[in-house]
Image 1 (cartoon, rainbow, N blue to C red):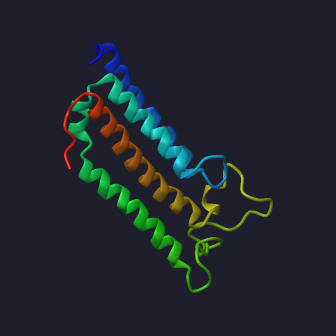
Image 2: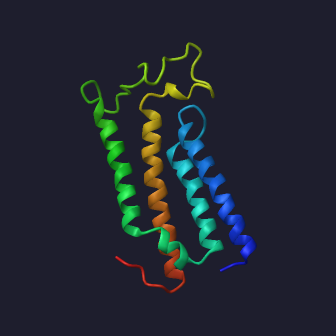
Length: 153
């Protein structure tokens, strides 16, 4: 475990890292980024916490079963969205142009047009959940393995 200054800074920075990761996930259809990139950013915050605190401390908050459920939920949401438009075509963007997600801009989507992606932002969030849970489980398992602790099944 590192000094109190490092632990306090890590506790403060994790909020900004998580918000930036969610921003990248939410704007993935109009900017470079998406579910994988935003999820990897959030997991970098988990790695920072693993470095600042011991893996035993982080293991208390990140349970493998919870991570497994979150990862499976992300995959399930992605599959449901992929099959939602199967009446037309697989992965049909059925929410594009609806009143809920706004119309299609005449000049193409820009940074201010976040509700123009239809189901794409929802798919980005599903991928983000899967990446956050999957990579966090891998990083946590590696940290526990390198510290000599038993990884529970």
